[in-house]
Length: 167
Image (cartoon, rainbow, N blue to C red):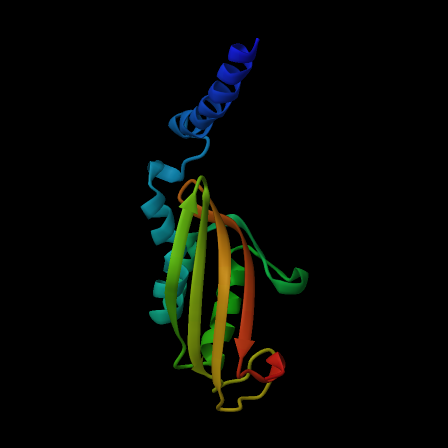
């Protein structure tokens, strides 16, 4: 009986190790095309193409039609057209804004991106008049990808130097 118990204790963890690999092979845990790097590249496009290159047309290539962004304090942005309006507001409020992707991790259909975005508050941003202050945003965003587009993400950010941040 003791040998059976020991054998069972060894086999159960080994058997469970195959579950993620089997699910991935069947496609249920893979990013589009099976490439974690492609998923990272897609998630990175917000920072590289939209913020750094100021290419608002890229938004329709990045986000699905039914995209939902879950932001701090329950804020939501739905659909690429609202993402475009938000991006335009950020870029108008900080004409020298640049973003850097510090780290990315991908697993299954999710990509986690840690980023820093810097610029100066040079334009009106949601009713806050420009101050000229340096404005840094640090954050982490978790993006869920389906069919080569981001369909949903969750973001936590910290702003420094912006009047609404209290700093």
